[in-house]
Structure formats: C-alpha cells, structure tokens
Amino acid sequence: MHYGWVIVAVGGFVLFSCLGLARFAYTMILPAMRTGLSLSYDRMGIISTANFIGYLTAVILSPFLIRSFLPRLTIASALLLISLCMFGISTASSFWVVAVLYSLTGLGTGFANIPMMVMVTYWFRSKQRGKAAGLMIAGNGLAIIFCGQLIPLLNQRYGSSGWRMAWMALAAISLMIAAAAALLLRSRPSDVGLEPMGRPEPVQIDGLKPRNRPDAGSIIVRLGILYLVFGVTFMVYGTFIVATMIGDYGLSEKQAGFYWSWVGFFSLFSGVGFGVLSDRIGRSRGLALVFAIQTAAYLLVGLKLGSIWLMASIVLYGLSVFAIPAIMAAAVGDYLGFSRASTAFAIITIFFAIGQAVGPGAAGFIAAATGGFTTAYRTASLFTAGAAVLAVTLPATADSG
Image 1 (cartoon, one colour):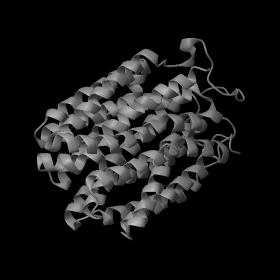
Image 2 (cartoon, one colour):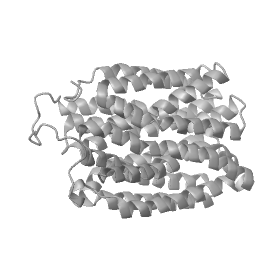
Image 3 (cartoon, rainbow, N blue to C red):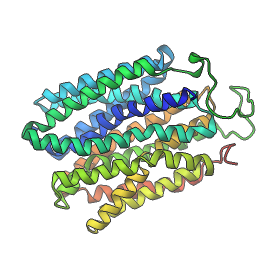
Image 4 (cartoon, rainbow, N blue to C red):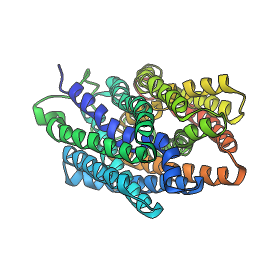
C-alpha cells in the first residue's frame, strides 16, 4: 500500500479534530453554552467570529511557517494548541475569556488545516487529488456525527455543566490525535523514498507557464472569490442551524442533535463524491454544481416552508458542505502547479477565512435585529447563486480538457 493512503487516513483524523471538533462542535454546544453563560445571539456570533479571525491569522502566516518548519511538526503543535484551548474553555466563566481562547483555537485550526490540505498536492498527482482530498475531508463528517450524539448525552447526564464536559472530552480526543499526527505523518513522499501517488503526467518545467495554463493572478482571484462566498455562507448555516431548529421549528435539543448528525452522515460522501466527480468533469463544473446545491439548501430553510423542507435542506447541505474545500485543494495544484500550490492555497484560504469571520457575526446581528435567521439564510442563497455563475467562467484544466 502506498504511504499516501496513510497520510489520507491520518489527515482525516487531523481534520476530525481541527475542524470537526474545534469548529463544528460549537454548533451543538452553542444552545447550552449560551444558557450557561447568559449570552445573547450576537455575542455567540462574536465568539464564532473570533475563532475565524484566529484562523485568518494562521492562514496568513502558514506559508512562512510551512517553509520554516516541517508540516508534520506544524500540524502536531497546532492540534496541541487546540486541545489546551478547549480545556481552557471548559473552565471559563466569562464572555471575553471564551472569545480569546476560541480565537486561539481558530489559530490552531488554521495551522493544522492548511499544511494538511497542501500535503494532498505533494502526495498525489492530479488525477488522484480530488479523491484523496475528499476522503480526508470525510473526517469532518465523522466529527459532526460524533458530536451530534455525544453532546446531547453529556448535557442530559451533567445538566448545566454538560457543555463544559463536552469541551473537556473534545480536548482529550484532540490531544490523542496530535500524538498520532506527530508519529505517523510524513511531510513529503521523498521522506520515505516514494514518488507521489498516481500516474506520472507530462513533464513541465516548473516555474514556466504551460501553453494551456491560464494566468495565475486571474485564477487565484476567481478561486478566492468563490472560497470567500463559501466561507461567508456555509458557516452561517453550520453555526446557527441547530439553534434555528430549536427556536424556529420547536425541536428538542436531542432531536436537533439527531438531525445535525444527518449532516455529518451525508457529508461523508460530500468531499470524496464531488472530489472524484471534479476529477472527471473538471473543477469549474464541479464547483458550479456544488454552489447550486447549496443555494437550494439555504433557500429551503430561509423560506421556512415546514419540517419536510427543513429535512431536505439538511440533506442538501450535508451532501455539499465539504465539497468546495476538496475541489479547491485539487484545483490549486491543477491550475498553478506543484511549486506554487502551497502559497496559492494559503492565498485563497485568506479569502475563505475573511468570509468565515464576517458570516456568523453578521448573521448573529441580523438575528438579534429580526428575531430569527431566515433573512440570513435567504441572503446566503443569493451569494451562492452568484458563485455558481462565476464558477462556470473558470477555464478548463489541462486534465479536464
């Protein structure tokens, strides 16, 4: 077995921790944590935004850090930081302490996620990148399923302290994954005497622009805008949908957790399914299709048509939620080449991180002003519809014709 698949497996657990536990668990913990700390929705939105500001900072610094330190060391250290911060949040009693610690958690998320996704370009050639990135991103879905089942049980058993026990449990898991990453990850195939996985492609002189390769600056800007829209919209839904199910649809926390687990289940097929599809039909068409599906998901919940359409929205969101990162990780390598993949992915992720920083905070203020999130979901659907149109304008890669 090629060691690249070990990288994918460990990478799945890395994303399970740095994104699934450190970020998406917040959606499940939010209602009980809001009650326990007597926080308003706009303050909970600010806490979420603080996390994304930390993530944005990490994204800006990641290219320099990757050049100075081995990705394996960077990832393991980042997971350790996440674990310590989540332990700290479990004992916090004030808004500002939680906001600071969660911003540092975001910093750790960026320092773990960016090097991990860039490693896909190092370990896999073009025809395998979408599949590899998608399989790795499935770790997010497993974490959503896990949190959707664990957190309601902890709240039921420990009452008002349940959210604290949840952060503590997630911190302990992240600590174990940090140790596994330090032991098993390898930064590049050459570290273990291997070539990247997949059939060799036509030799190109690194640093020169092949005849079919589009202008790098234009591609980075367009990919960045698409990633910005994804960042703005997907975490509005991902942060507040559980609160919406409880507040607007009258579901219990246990029912909402069960439905949130559906997101995790369907998202298992999201990254790998659309990653493989984009390997076949091209990154442009793959991105356009995903944004179209997300538009339907946001519009269905934004129109508040009833429980059946809420379920349809959850299924569509789950099927598409992790497809964009998988396609983006493959696209930067296809469009910009091996040597520029790390810097290019970091640049477009800055756009993504800015979107994440703006989205939940803005949605929290909209909810405080309007008494709900329907306006925020409708606005998100307009953004993703525009992104679907923009994605169609991307040129075909050499591999997709």
